[in-house]
Image (cartoon, rainbow, N blue to C red; front, side, top):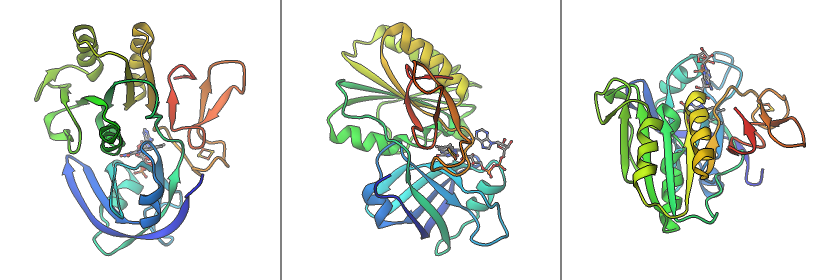
Amino acid sequence: MSGMVQQLCKVQSCDEVAAKTFLLRFTSSEISASAQPGQFVNVLAAETGEGPLLRRPFSIARVDDNIVELLFHAIGTGTILLSRKRPGETIDVLGPLGQSFHVDADYGTALIVAGGIGVAPFPFLTADLLKRGKRIETFVGYRNAGQILTSYLQNIHIATDDSSKGFHGNVVQLFEPFLDRTDLGKAKIFACGPTVMLKALTELAKRKNICCEVSLEGHMACGVGLCQGCPVERTGDGAKYALVCKDGPIFLTTDIIL
Ligand SMILES: Cc1cc2nc3c(=O)[nH]c(=O)nc-3n(C[C@H](O)[C@H](O)[C@H](O)COP(=O)(O)OP(=O)(O)OC[C@H]3O[C@@H](n4cnc5c(N)ncnc54)[C@H](O)[C@@H]3O)c2cc1C
Ligand code: FES
């Protein structure tokens, strides 16, 4: 975990950018300098005893100079507290943590597939892929038009469950026919979203013989490999489980069983 720091960081802004979804920007020259796409930070929403004692993990959504951005759904105690942070207040941040996406592999087209708030790590990944001159196609699926987030993404294809925008259906149903009708050359899939979506995508990638890396966002406690609280079953003959926080959150779909 080279470059990992724990520090109190100043919040620059925290705004609702889609339904119950917040963009929080904080300053950290250390984290912004060392973070790689796919890594996450573990944030304590309250500095004192008033809030949850456990840290909450969030993908690094984007880095802009010395600012780090997080995109999150306010769904429970920690994230609601975090959504109320105002500019000038501080948050206690541990990071960057975990493994990053493997962007330097041998492929010409990056296929990004995101479900809901699973879009969070992809603005950062997109910036890196653009620097490397990769072609990028991005598929995002949301419950409805009110939840759509597309900032800093490239060549965006949208699906909504209720047909309020784009394709009517889930993001994998939108993605599969695109694969069939498009000449992509050598491609690699990068995905993040609900487990059911990642399972469907794992099957699809296997059938089409496309390399697929996913970011897992299950429950987590310590975030640094100490509590054993984030196991994921692995394939192969070695250890039966990997830890999402330390060995992941990024995994090749051929290495794990979802
Ligand atoms: C590596 C990693 C990266 C993540 N990145 C992001 C991100 O970029 N943006 C984002 O919005 N979220 C992300 N998450 C999920 C985020 O950490 C949780 O939403 C957050 O911890 C919830 O905290 P809370 O105190 O608000 O909710 P709690 O009060 O703890 O829980 C509220 C409700 O949500 C459920 N819940 C809590 N966490 C999860 C979860 N991870 N998956 C499914 N259900 C859950 C609980 O069971 C409960 O029903 C990430 C998780 C991991 C492990
Ligand atoms: S969260 Fe503690 S080991 Fe992964």
